[in-house]
Length: 73
Image 1 (cartoon, rainbow, N blue to C red):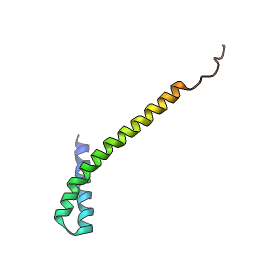
Image 2 (cartoon, rainbow, N blue to C red):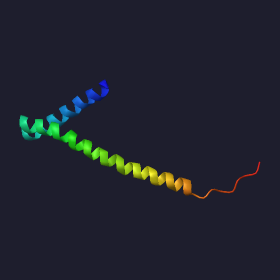
Image 3 (cartoon, rainbow, N blue to C red):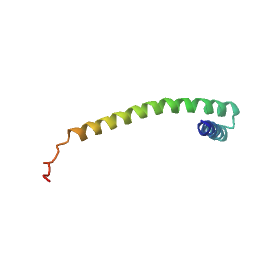
Image 4 (tube, helix red, strand yellow):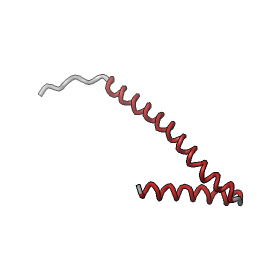
């Protein structure tokens, strides 16, 4: 949990620094630092859903693939 918290602090700091560097505004930098992670979290949710569908399709194809003849021992 400490690693997650430290990454969140780094993420907010980078978002703020980039927005502040581009705009010179503390307010806009602060807003971007708060809004960007929220938007990124929502995007991540949908990204994971897409990849779960891809995994499911691959698993279905693998289980439906024809198997070769059994080799007699």
